[in-house]
Length: 299
Image (cartoon, rainbow, N blue to C red; front, side, top):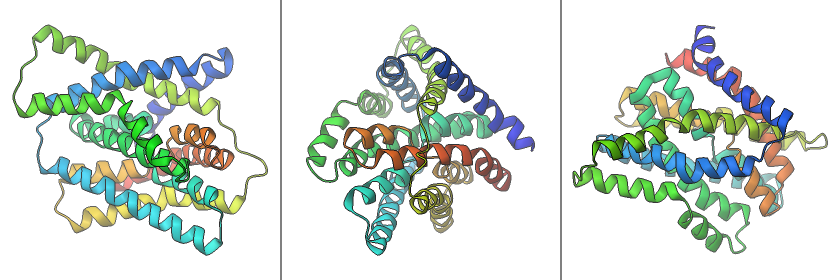
């Protein structure tokens, strides 16, 4: 109960604020999201990678992210083949289970639970997940039809990719920033987390569970995203020498609900959007309980 009150509840209250305001005022979510994507998040990403001590832990995060993705994709493909699902359903399940909400939801939870050091790991994972999701997510949403081209185009339009690359170069070559310039970037970066949390609440206000949705697919997607994914992470970190804090961060982040961004991809490419949005909403609701329990277990 202490974990829920001190870590999960503060995040839920912020999400709820965005949810209520969106239901009440029907704000232009696209404009606010654009502000976060093109200004706020790149500033946070630049600040994090500029300051962080790059070591083998960050190499591990990269390897872990890719392995987790491919394991989840294989699980979905095997299940879809066994159930003889059409390709669009298979792609919808991949979108729903392979891509977690590590940014809007995961990063603030890690900040509340494990402080700035854990948060630096969370931001790094968030960036990698964003790149992976915007490539493989678009590819599978397009069901392979022009998916590769669409994925490359999406990645090249992501400001946080360039912010990460520039920050890493500045970090590796010890290129200094003036105090005032760094303060400006830092100031904008600090606004990122509360804004993206509010955006998540607003996005959830737009989601609905389809009443005629296939219950088996909904239960399967929820189970893989909320339980199988962190189990894979737990097994992986047990097999390799990982910093204990990083291990906890990765397990918690992989237990996050479905990334709401996947619903936009599913809608854009007509890849079972009702199924994807239903799983995104259900996993977010379930996470209130599961994340509290997981944080209690991990300590």
